[in-house]
Image 1 (cartoon, rainbow, N blue to C red):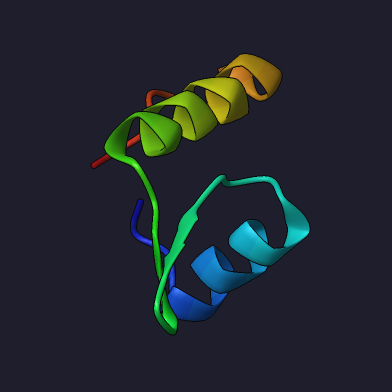
Image 2 (cartoon, rainbow, N blue to C red; image 1 turned 45 degrees about the vertical axis):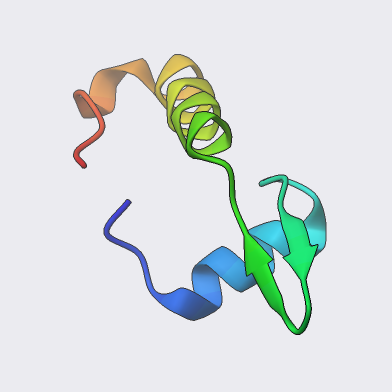
Length: 52
């Protein structure tokens, strides 16, 4: 996604990016990342394809 760790934490805590809590860590399912990136692209189509 090429974003900082804090950005991912914010997305998880806001509910925009689903994650599973494992102990004190969060795990984001790979499909959730693809879904999030697709949704971003659908809402901002003029900005090119997502990288990653």
